[in-house]
Length: 208
Image (cartoon, rainbow, N blue to C red; front, side, top):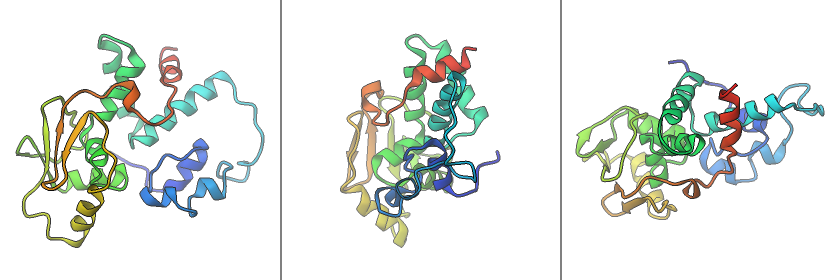
C-alpha cells in the first residue's frame, strides 16, 4: 500500500497543529509548526473562510495523519466502529489506539508512530509470545507485547530501551520496564486519549 513519503512537518503545518510525527523534534525549537504556523504552499498564509465540510474534512485528515493511516484504512476502521455498540466516534478512536504500532509507541519504545511501525514490520516484537510483523493488529485486554529476544544488542534498540525507562505510559497499559514487556489491562477510553480530537466531526463527515 502506498504511503506518504514527503516531509512529515508539512502535514503538521497543513493541519495547523502538532501531530508529533517526528518525535522529539516536535518538542524542540526546530518544530516547523512553531517556526512557520501557516499552511504550506504559496497561498498558505491567505485567510480563507472554511465551510462546514472543510472543518469536518480537516478533523478527519488530522486523525488519519496522527495515527499514520491511508484513507482506505481509516474508512474501514470507521465502518467497523459504526457497527459496534456504543458511540461511533469513541469506538473509532479506541480501535486506532489499540493498533499494535500505537501500543509500541505508547510503551515508549519509539519516538513516533512511524518508527514504531517500522519496528513491528521488522519483527522486533512478539504478541503473546508469537512472532508478529503486522502493525495494524488490534490488541485486547490480556494481550502481552514483548521485545524479541536477541534484538537488544543493537545500538538503536538500546537507545529505545533507555527511552522506555522514562516514558509516560497510559493507564490501560502495564509496562515492565526492566524486561520491556507490556500487558494490556483494559481497553482505552476517550479520557485516555490525550490528543484534542473532535471525533463527532469525523462521524458527521462520513454520515453524509
